[in-house]
Amino acid sequence: MPELIEAEMYRRALDPLRGAEITSVELLDEAYVRPSGVSTSDVHSIVGSTLLSTRRHGKLVLLDLGHGSDRRSIGLHFGMTGRLFVDGAGPIDALVYSSERKDEAWDRVRIHFGQHTLAVNDPRRLGALHLDPADDHLGPDAASITPAALERVVRGKTAALKATLLNQRRIAGLGNLLGDEILWRASIRPDRESGQLSEQEVEVLAHVIVETIGELTARGGSHTGDTFEHRQLGGRCPRDDAEMHRLTVGGRTSWFCSAHQQ
Image (cartoon, rainbow, N blue to C red; front, side):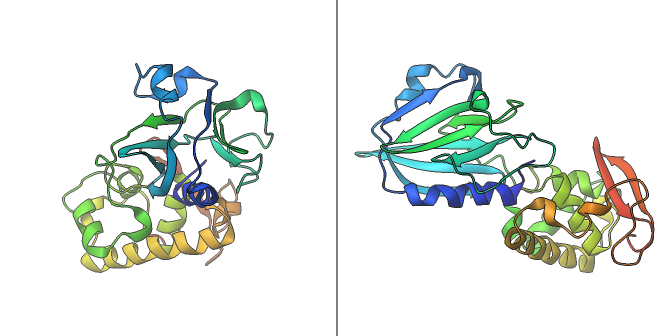
C-alpha cells in the first residue's frame, strides 16, 4: 500500500510537469472526488491552470496550480491500492496488497498537460482526488520528525505506540509496513503504551523514523525493510533469529521480535 515513501516517489514523478498547463481532465469516476458534492464542472475548472509546484504532507501529494492571479491546489490520496502514472510509466511497478496489473478500467482520473498525461489507477477505489484540500488536520511529516515533535505526539497518550504512529492526525505518513520496521529497528514493542516511553526512547525513535524512511526510499519502497520477508508464521528475526510474533494493534496486523523488542 502507498505509504509516505511511495507518495514521495509519486511526487517526484510529477516534478517534470512543473510549468506545464492543464489542457483537459477526464474524470472517469465521479465518486473519486472529495469532498462529496464537488461537481464535475468544479473539477474541470482547473483546465487552463499551470502546475507551479508539487508538495507532499504525509501520504498526501499536493499539486499547486496557478491561473493568472488565482491559486488552486489538487490533493491526491492513494488509499491502499492507488498508483500514479505519467505518460503510462510509474515510479512503482507494484504495490503490496494490490494487483500487479495496470488495467485502464481502474483509472479514476486523467489530467492532461498537452502531450503529457497524469493518471491515477486505483483498483479498490480507496483513494481520492481532493480539490483545494486543507492539510492542517495532519500531524508533522514523519520524514522530518524531530525528537521534540515526537515527544509532543506521544506524551500523555495511553494508546498503543504503533496505533499512535499510524494515526495520521498525530504523525503523517507512516503505514503498517513502515510502522513495524521502525519499531523493530528501535527495539520497541508495537503494543507499548505511547506515553510510557522514556525521553531517551523518544529521541532514538525519532532518529530511527527519519533514518528508516531515508534508507527504504533509496531501496525503492516501504516493502524493502529488513523484516518484510519475515512477517509470517515461522518467521525469524533477522537481527537475533528469535521467533517473530504477530498481534493486532489498532486493528492492524503487527509483527515484532519476541526477544529484543521490549
